[in-house]
Image 1 (cartoon, rainbow, N blue to C red):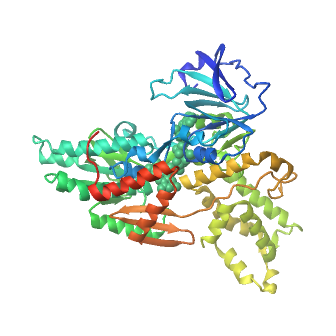
Image 2 (cartoon, rainbow, N blue to C red):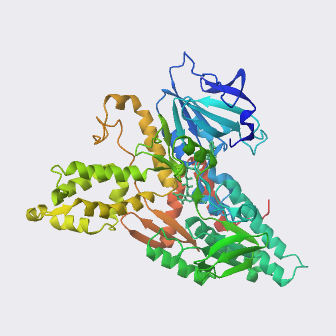
Image 3 (spheres, rainbow, N blue to C red):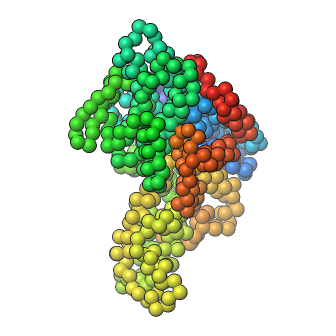
Length: 568
Ligand code: FAD
């Protein structure tokens, strides 16, 4: 029902030996009798991968087993290195330096992997099919439609920008999510400067053209503000001397602080640096409306104010794509925000469907249920209490299953239980102290919120891709020798260990060759040395030597010649 052509005739394609072949039959979508494309002679299991972003590409790069016939479907025929998109907006790095064609990636694999530039618009888990149309913004114009069937489905379609249904945002704001967005921003920034330089404009109009507003004080919004500020100060001042003083950059954040997922020291440093740099920071400011000339905000006091703008960049977080919302309705997850999987990345309530990256999350409710079950199991005499030693075992068990919890415990945010456990180390007498299970559960329920925060980042998506590829590589072997922890619910062992996320740290580039780095173990570093660390990490994380060379070349070019301000 989300597509007007559901009842129109579709050409049904089938996957044969990895290539898409149109079957002669044409069917209507409603109650459509889709051709069963399982070829009798094909022994390979068919894997369909939706998406060529961080999760999908990492899965493909790490797949080694030739026992699969893999069909990749994505409207983007390239992988984009999103952490460098803010650098693309001002020409620090070129757009083509941060993308790698999917076909180059899969060609190197020498496996049965095939790519088709198409967007999936419906998943039918019951009949193990996905319905697709050719990508809309290409010359195929989304007119070709077909169905592909699978034995295993890997969903890695990412997310869309969240506008919170704020009026005018879709129409008037720029987003910073895709490569095209970054290119559009780059052109619009130059437009604003050229417009402000037209001789007939009044000062007021010039000021308006050079008023840049960024909505959202997360890492992307902050990095873009910093990039823009550097661009103005390092390049624009020389090229547009007559208007340089009229530039104003404003960052709007609804919460109390920017970068609130970072250590407080980083937040404080960033806020002070922005103040010094003349970037206006308005916290507690929620955007309520954007018109073609003005952006209106509601302050904490309830007061509504408006300001004119030349360009607005909206960067306030993500939401599920319509495809995922529709799929969630089908499988009884309509009340959720994001697709729920278990710790093995299997979509709950579906067979042989996996989901990873920004479109999925490990189901909280189930995790808490599991934690409760661990407590129940440990309470052998049903007394409602556990000894410290037993609690220690429970916590070890939870950490084994849920690495995020371990992270949480290590982050020193855990309450008295940990202190108690630490105290009890080596003290046998204290081990007999009895603790109330309900109290313990209450304390651990904080874990819940921590689990929710398994961040929607490239780091998580890439690690999930590696994990899932590894599961697929060893599917047969693990069938025979299961290695996962003994399940407390149901019988036997799981085939694989659950997914473990390893947080490797995060960066916040703040401009002026200064970056804040928060590394594991709460290690914080801010300044030029972190900027060099940032350069080396991002160069090393490139998906290919080709993009690595291009990115390093772009950085060097910028040092020597400055950024290119042509509006092309
Ligand atoms: P994506 O990488 O978004 O990939 C989704 C894929 O699915 C795309 O190929 C898309 O074309 C495809 N697709 C979409 N719809 C369909 C469909 N209907 N059918 C088939 N395919 C479909 N994370 C970090 O860890 N560090 C950073 O520094 C960082 N910086 C960022 C900066 C920016 C500007 C942005 C936007 C994000 C940044 N992130 C960063 C977050 C990171 O990019 C995401 O978490 C990551 O891309 C998620 O990976 P994914 O594979 O789930 O989705």
